[in-house]
Image (cartoon, rainbow, N blue to C red):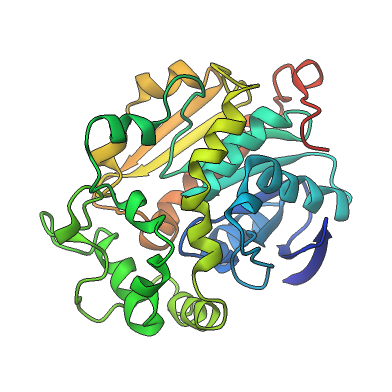
Amino acid sequence: MKSHYIDNDGVKLHVVEQGEGPVVLFCHGFPSIWSLWRSQMEAVAQAGYRAVALDMRGFGESDAPAEAEAYTPLAIVGDLVAVLHHLEIKKAILVGHDHGANAVWTASLMRPDLFSAVFGISVPFMPMGGPSFLDQLRAAGMDSFYMFDWMRPEAEQDWAEVATVLPRAYYWTSGLAPEGERWDPFDPAKNPFRPAPDMVIENDPEHLPDLIASFSRTGFHGGLNYYRALDTFYSIASRPFSRALVKQPSFFVMGGADGLNKLLNVSEQSLREALPGLTGFLMLDGVGHWPQLEAPELLNGALLDFLRKIAWRPSVGADQLASPLVQ
């Protein structure tokens, strides 16, 4: 693998790549770093693609601006555009998980001229316009929702014991935890910080040690800023893209044991309403929030099938849909 460091308007971005061919750009979420994608990068590289993953701003070896205002859609999508420009890439297929999924759905709206297809994991595309899902939760009095807790200025304290908290968080949000005891985004008693059995990720034993070393160095302020910026993110993106649909070819994967199902209630029918280019939807039984680690062979198979299926398909209307918002 080759590493690069890219400057985007004063923010350093760390990028790792493997393989040659059409570009697949991977975007992780919270709490992760680029190495979450190790298995997927190897699979697509072996299949004849150029796998590119970055430490999203706020994580890993990339810079972590202190202010939440630095995590708007213009900034996040701008980072992805900067990666393409630096590596002289004309087009890429996007793969995103968690906050990274939010990033790739938004990037597909803002720059369809650059991003020809989208593969989302764990967080589906939610059309802009009307009250945000956070405002809907506030109106319903659901103040116990975990995102509100993680927006607090002192939220980093919950993550302070990195070597203890990260394995616990991965365990309780995975399908390994017993049904009925797994992380529940609406129940503070089922938070991801509870004591848990020793956690070893058999499919990638290096991932948790890498993660612990990285967050021990950086802390969690940058990553938690994604939550603090959500209201601003939605406000900015919803103005020009109210009711806009993602028209590029797309695919969505969700773990059946992911606690986010309590919020999202995803179905293929609901996805197709916002993703007219949807080529497939995969719900992985018994898998939690981390399909990359819990079911890498199934996820890799779905991703490679998607890449093969869309190889001949250009981005739908890309030249007509290109947005000047992010250069």
